[in-house]
Length: 305
Image 1 (cartoon, rainbow, N blue to C red):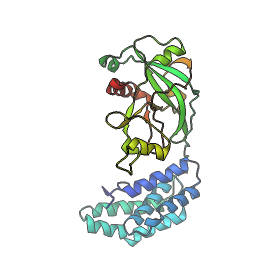
Image 2 (cartoon, rainbow, N blue to C red):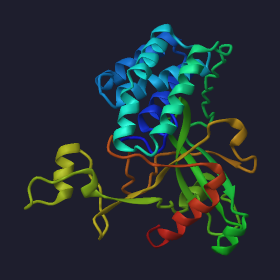
Image 3 (cartoon, rainbow, N blue to C red):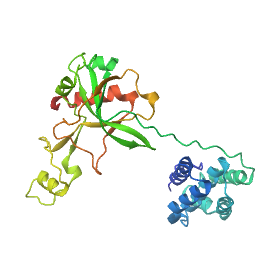
Image 4 (tube, rainbow, N blue to C red):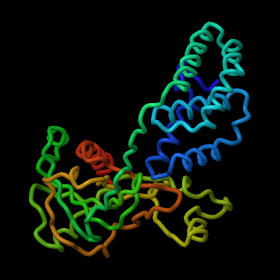
């Protein structure tokens, strides 16, 4: 049983149907389009003796609550209640809780037969594209108690936009390299910036990205033959990662304390900078956690900066 309680949405299938249907409405689908897409997605389970009724209960209740209940969906849900298949399952698998489940379904019957509320407006999420340009460098001063505790108070993380990516649902956010100043003084020109060391933000086992076929040849050579990409790996067989996503999903959440240093060349990447492929995604950082998360990564990999 995919349920962990008697309530309608204490069930994996019911939750998934509700969330998927609402997500389609948020993306601008009409009620009919969203319904059809959900039906197509879940069609293999509609005839399932256990999950089929749950599907119709969830879709009907969600549509009713949003003022969008379609007659055919209502008909299917009421038919499932009348047939009693779900009630029989509970009598069989959890007889002590079966009366509670029966009450839930009778309440659902009453709701579906009552007048719907007015159609609720579904707000569509607004997408945001960060305005930073490729090469832009910003400084973020470390001024938190955590920075003081970790011995980096007053220093700056510097990040340079080198690419961009899509962040759910359709935001365009920057991909950056990160550096850190040696003290509390910012670089005054591009050369001083380029002289600073990059911050390693992660390591990935090459074996996680590629499984060698020939045990008599190095994994690096086989990886290069297959992908055309060559990287040096460290003594533990791992690649170093230097790129992160900055989750700039609105102008409002970008810290006002950021200092723009200029637009510098991106032609001096970290040695063996690992570029994302279909097998791997970089870490994404929310600004409210940036201080602690970035400091932790810096300290963790400080010995290999």
